[in-house]
Image (cartoon, rainbow, N blue to C red; front, side, top):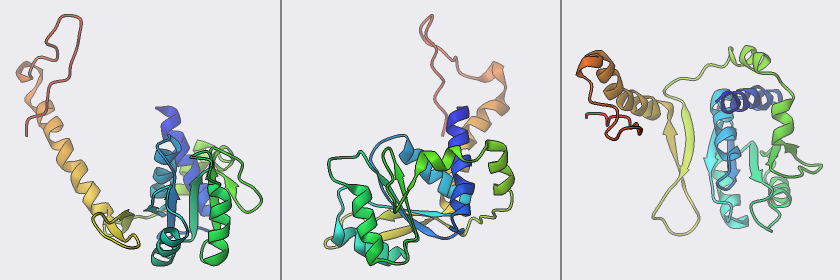
Length: 204
C-alpha cells in the first residue's frame, strides 16, 4: 500500500517540473501493467488529463487523437510488444509540436524521452506532498478523455469530469457508512463458514 501511494504522489510533481501544467493532455499507449495504474493517478494528482488510447493504434489514430486533444505529453510502454512504441512516439511528436514530453515505462527511454521510473525516484514522498499542496483541482475540471465506443473511422474522445467520479465515490461509500452507523450488533455476520471470513454485501 505504501508503494502504491508513493509512486503516483512522487511522479506528480515531476510532471509539473517538466513544464506540464494542470489541464495539459497526455495520451497513454500502455497495456495492462501496474504502471498503467500508477502513471494516470500521478497525472490526476498533478492536474494533467490522461487521454485513453490503444497500444495497437498507429499513425492515423494517434495522429488524430494528438490533434484533437492538443496533447503536450505522451506515455508509452516500451515492452508491450515487438513494435517500437518509444520510437513511434518520437516520430509522432515530430509531426505534432505540441507534444513536448515523451515518458517511457518499462524500457529504455532513449534520447528523445524520459524514463518513468527515473522520474519517480528523483523525488521523495515528503517533497512530492509539499509540491502538490499548491495544485488546485475542481469538480468541474476534466479528469480524463475516454475513447468513444461504437464509432467508425478515426477514434473520438469523450471528456469525463472529476464531479462524475466524486459522485460515484460518494454513492459507493454510502452503504458502508450506513452499515457503520447501524452498529456492530445489527450488522450481518461477517462469515458463513468457520475459518473463512467474507465481508457482508452492502445494502442498496
